[in-house]
Image (cartoon, rainbow, N blue to C red; front, side, top):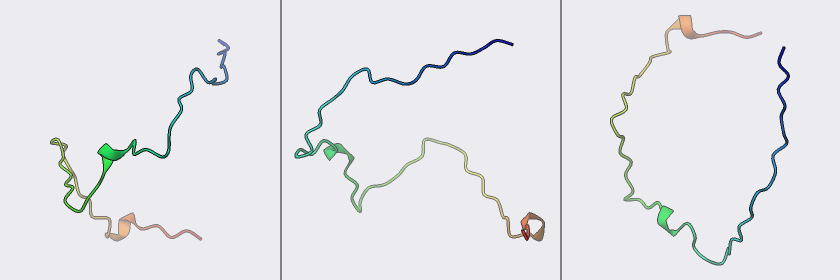
Length: 57
């Protein structure tokens, strides 16, 4: 059997963040923000039938 060698993660670089500035200004969500899908098909399922219910003791 092959033995896999795993290494612990390490820090390669650090970045200073100034919390006094608005670095997420481009991510503002307002009441006018809309979400549009890019054509992904959506399937709806009805799980109200009794065969989908399970009673755990």
